[in-house]
Image (tube, rainbow, N blue to C red; front, side, top):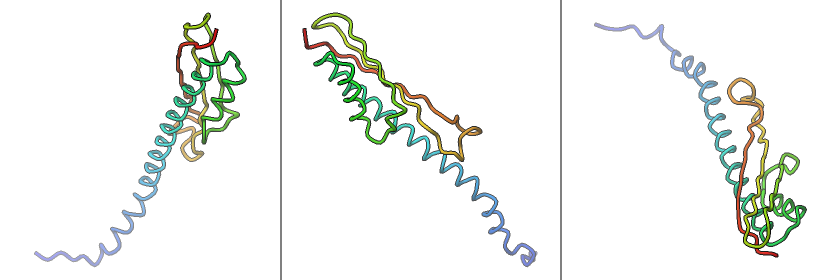
Length: 129
């Protein structure tokens, strides 16, 4: 039995054209998730740098400066730093860093939230008296 394929010419191109926007949207979503994961790792490292600074100095300004210096690639205006000292030498000091990561405008609102709130925390022992 012979099949006449003359009327099916170009159907693969039409199917590809219909599927391409969906594939590109999924690719963009995957890249955005990767960017958010990178931001989370950078934020965790920045909280560790801030905790180290808080362990050797009792200055909130020095802690914030250390966090912002370690948070390479993040918008400093979106970073919030909270350092808590709890006593004298040997007591724990905790640094919590929050960051509101923006989402790509094509995905914001209907596929992902417009802003993803990330949090990093680190605790170390105080080394000063």
